[in-house]
Length: 330
Image (cartoon, rainbow, N blue to C red):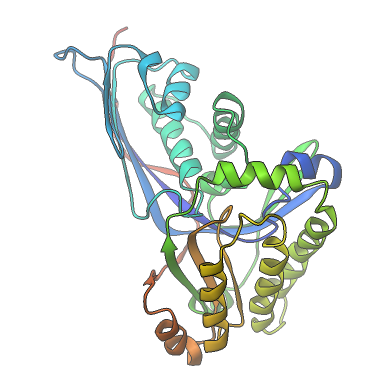
C-alpha cells in the first residue's frame, strides 16, 4: 500500500504567462507557493477475489474489468501510461476540487508518485511534474498552463520561469520572520465552486494574442513582487501589487470574474484589504487578500457569509507518507 500527500498551491503573480501560447514567444514566470492543505492518494493492488479488476473511489466509485472502461480520464490515461493493473485507488482532500488551487494537478502528481512507488520505483520531483504535465495537457488534452503540476511536485515558495526550452524552479529566499509576516497578512476565503478551469483556460488561451500587453505587464510584476519579498521593502507593497495584477487578470476574459465576486472584492477592500485576487482560472473558488493585522477583523466581518480558511505555507511538495511494498505478479 502507498499513500501520497500532495499540497495545493496559491499563485500570486504571473498566472496566464505559463500558457504555451504566450511563453513560447514572450517567456513566462509565476510566483507561487504551496500551503498546508493537501490531497491524499491511497493505492494498493486489488486482491483477486472480485468480479472487477480496478476500483476507484473519489467523488464517485468506479469498478471496472478493463482500464479502458474507467471514466476518470486522468486515472485511465495514467494507468495506461505507467502500465498499472489490478489496483484500488482512493482519493481524499482537505479542500474541494474546482476551487482555483490546482487540485486536479495535485491529484495527478500524487497519483503518479503513488503508481511509481507501488512499482518500487523512485520518481524525483521534476519527473513527476513533467509526467503530470504530459498526462493532463497531452494525454487528457486539457487546456491550461504548466504552473500547477510544477508547484504541487516541488512545493515551497518559488519563482518558476518558462521559455521555449522548458522551465526552471528557483526558491524565493526570504527570512523566516518575513515569510511569517507575509503568511499572517494573507487571508483566504471560499466563494463557492468555480466553473471548470479548462473551459476558462480555453478562453484565456484564445485571448492571448489580443491581451499580450496585459500579460506582459503581469509578467513584469513577477520580478517586482519577488524583489519586494527579498528586499527590505514594506510588505504592504505586495498587497497593493496583488490588487494591480487582479485588475489586469480580470480584463483578460469576462469569464474570470463575476458581478458577485467583484462585489465581494470591493467589500474586502473597503474594509481594509490592500489588495487580493481570485485564485486559479476564475469564475469562483477562493479569494486571497493581503490584510494587515489591525484590519483583519473588519475584513472577516465584511465577508462573514464566506468560509474563512486559515493556512500556513509549506515547503515539502508531494511526498510518500506511507510505503509498504507489495509482491505482485502479472
